[in-house]
Length: 77
Figure (cartoon, rainbow, N blue to C red):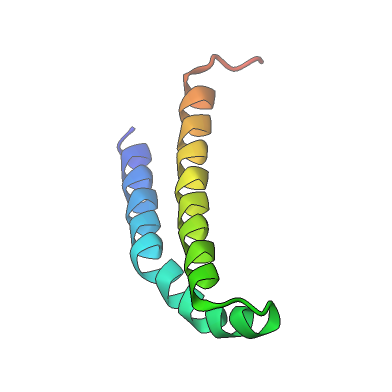
């Protein structure tokens, strides 16, 4: 049981690290290309960034919800 707790702690820590550093860093790398190839102005690019962040958070929440539902269900043998 302790191993499961430490795996969850490592997962949560990596999610927070990626969320706070990784997403912002990588978006700044490809945002100029996105802006030029899609003919976006700055306000459109900001909107894309906001929805990127919302999608990332919704994906994490959906994954956590799925894990909690499947872990609490009895398994069929």
